[in-house]
Image 1 (cartoon, rainbow, N blue to C red):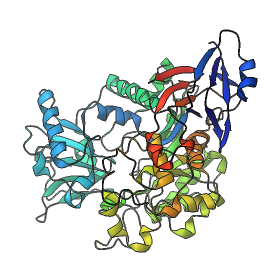
Image 2: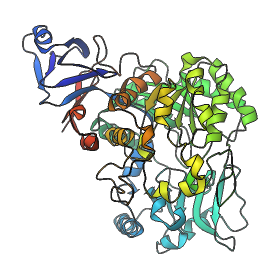
Image 3: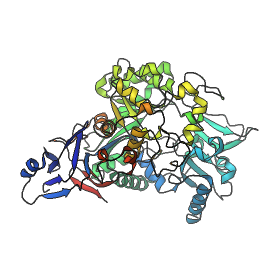
Image 4: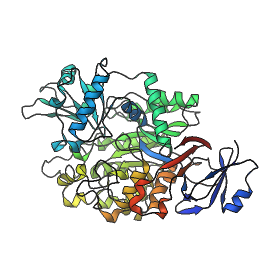
Length: 537
């Protein structure tokens, strides 16, 4: 590799510090500082990258995403880039007509907010001549037709599974929506992807992520969940062959129908990735509750209007023992927690654990205020998905009315967590949301919908959502870079400093010099992974 000199703009080093120029040599950062000084160290014949007034940042590490599933969905009936029942049906019809030999119509990406009460119906898909299984945007429900219900043998007499719910018509007939664990009743019957399908999905996702400046991530479910197949062999194969160029940590799935007897199996699964440079299976994902919109998020006081307090998927009386044992084995524990009770149960389980394992809790939609200081006290990181902290239909119509005024004000308390000394990492939850980190940064700073989104013209979309919880751009960019690299135990990424790996991203502008309302417009010009150019716009 020849030396690469980045000049003609600014470089964001970490935590709000900047430099004029950066020199890369043999895939590592060799020098950082004033342009004249750095340029003097460049070898003859070096390559120059003119930033054109844009910003050079460390490669982004997404701390919570599902890229293999995203890649599979991009190859199926993908509804994620459109909104509304007419648009969904048009896409579904086109997909069915172009894939006449497919036994199932499967895919996903539909939005609850597109349907009255957040619920589609089987009858809307019953025009199809085959079973349909379409996963909700956030992967906590599936929309199926009558043919799929018949294939699975689901009737009004079928009981709800312990970790899910079959939505029903007034007469008890399944309506066509399967929540949480009920998704597997149909999802496991859909055609299984081949090894080639899974590999192609991973590599397609990797290319898409490189185009967004993402050079590393934590896959938040490596295992079989909601009808998906285990991705561990796919990652191990791609890393061993060199096709995986990003740096990835896999969060091994905790089977919520089992207990501590699965821990030795998790240890063995971790061993299967030992010795690989770009993939490690050192985290364990525990999904403690569901989501607020279907009332499966675990809350302390009952939901307004509908009652109920949601679901704790892992018995809180047993959870601490499981987490203590995982911690003893050196695993990092990665929690999904949406409701304030689930957040509290996760924090309780971390009492007495080793902060060196870098445990974290993702999503954190609702936090009871007295629990905010416990993150820093326990050494637990807040894994933020900022994009959701806005006024849009799912928030205003399907969430706030059921939380009540006091609890609705506890949502996404980023600034409170920061003031309490909490360490941040950040991610997208792709394909639940866009993988574009600058959309999430825009929301974290503005607490409004990014321009160009499906909900940007919603009546309250540009009214800041709990504006007192805004973050500044340097803080949230640091969360997506240094914070998430730290969560992945990647000491050579996340900051632009001599000796670090040259995972670098050239932006088409310097968002620090432009109005904060335009952060969402930021695009990636070029991405480097270990000094190798892996994307150029």
